[in-house]
Length: 172
Image (tube, rainbow, N blue to C red; front, side, top):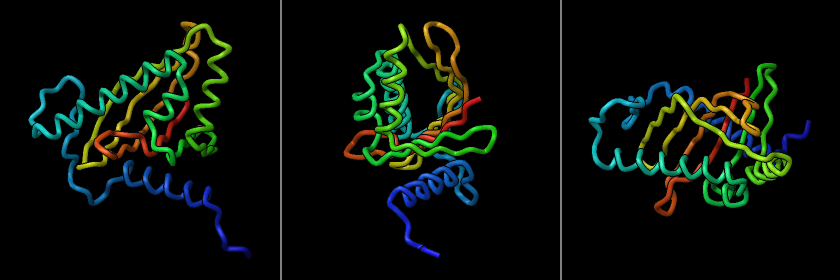
């Protein structure tokens, strides 16, 4: 049996490990900056600042998506090595490099008059220069609901800016 693995295989394993660490933080202390929407914060100013920066990142994410600027969306929001993983009810898991996902969205967007996505039930957790952003999402095409699901973003702060390192999403 050949035990050599490709770079893509290792990237998929890394994305899975990142997802498991964020989704099952057993043994980790409570999140330093988890703040349910609408609740006043008792967090330190640095943590509040990080959450403000992350909220701004996702406001830009949604704006670029709605304006169909997928190259800019890819380059500004994600690390170049970022992986995107789609899961489905049937257990199927599909792994995409972020460039492939951006291309797929751009191709679909060309056929639409309008596209936009909304995020609800957002939860942000910050641990130093690492963070997790979880949300329920709804995608609209030409004003009608096209798809819904749940998304989990693993973030890192690199060179002073928050970027998406991995995106794992479930589609209803």
